[in-house]
Image (cartoon, rainbow, N blue to C red; front, side, top):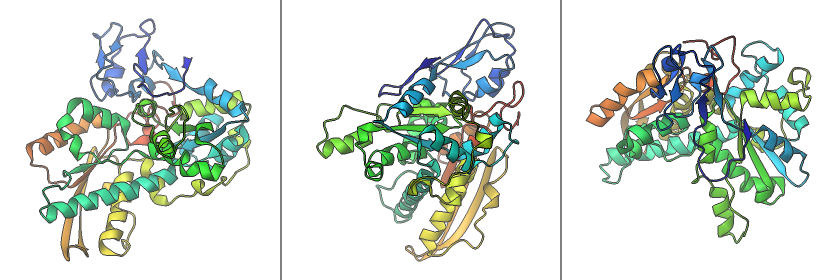
Length: 410
């Protein structure tokens, strides 16, 4: 694999099939959410890159290890860690901390946040937990939904489109852009937590780290290969744009410089002779290691919606939900739905909010989108995650056994 830094200019062909290893068993077709796998049964397959969303579900479910990523930034990150003039900031996603321990002999699903922080600190990373950015996303996406809801109820012709879709899953965003561009106005305008973290690290974070932003190298650690494609999108250089407005003459740089999967972070630790299992726990090095439980549950299907509903309820009613656990959006049913009736202080009336949660996108999203297109959808807010189970089962997670992804073939 080629060591790559994600400069502006989008990655193409992230996931490829090695025809010499492919047996034509069709396992990849079963798990591809966009029907991007081409080739007859028994013959070597290939990937239609125009349809591929980069999720790597085919990769983690291939029983013959015939599918691979074409981009890895491990070598680049190691070089940056050795550069005394660079501050390397790790941005670990919620799901990473409950999976990376498996690569070091710890039990499946072990929560190893402190050890992960310790290993990152030993490697030379500063820590900007993506959970912190997930909390920012909750506030932004939840506030946007409230604005759209209020504007619609008041008959504002400029109200944002409802239902509002979540925007934190890059596989889902790419799918919508490619297949349903007319529904893009329904997509939340909020960046994903990864992209918020990269921007904040190089703006406000530059003050915290006491360093010029162009000397900050941001490395997100994700359970998701599609995050590499997202980080490479040329529009995601807002930190550079901000500093340019302040008079900086630095060359253009992306908000997120590199993305490592959970598997790749484990490999990096091993290359640096760091054993996560025996590493002492560490609490982090700044306020960027602080976060709420709402940010943590972003890693599983329904988590974004549950966190957003908690926030919306608080903002609309002025009080906390009596029971924070919003169980109707939990579990592994393909499409989950719930309704919440609450008294909206601004509107001075009861408002019922209908929500839906979709995961395992390839098997479940089409009927939902058809209803939205037809104007018959009953929902106001819809969370969509590409992978079955959500990010916890992403294509960048440890592969358990032969041909199984983290949650198994659910």
